[in-house]
Image 1: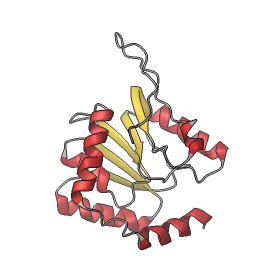
Image 2: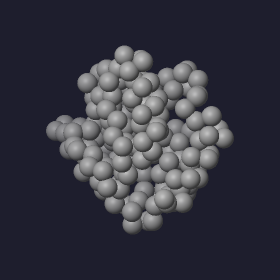
Image 3: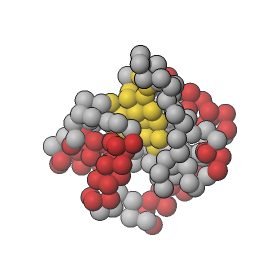
Image 4: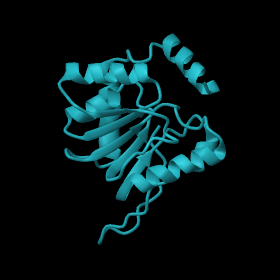
Length: 174
């Protein structure tokens, strides 16, 4: 077991992880839909998806979400919650460093402070892997307010769609 696995399990248990109010999740997804220009039919890669609350909310809006989570118990809970909500996002159990993402994503997200626990090289490898999974013009968002190292690596894939020009680098809203 890697050090961050027990840390996050303890943190999540102490903070009521997975039991945040639905309006909080809706507000998060409202922001992401607007910021990432998502529409029904878009495809989102949700890394470190936990119990799936964002993937489930995306699916309620007709956005295809694929959640990747290391903890099989969280994935089981995510699948149960998705079934109860009547939606079918895909959930994959695995380590983001090794599990294949596939391709064709319009956006990739990491919520909270789930990123940055690997070595610098492993972090860079995950970012390269995410960018390989994005469509031309696809975008990624990671919270950067908690770790200045992440501020240096927040990037958007260069827009390659005709007539749209280059995508601007933008910092996420607080």
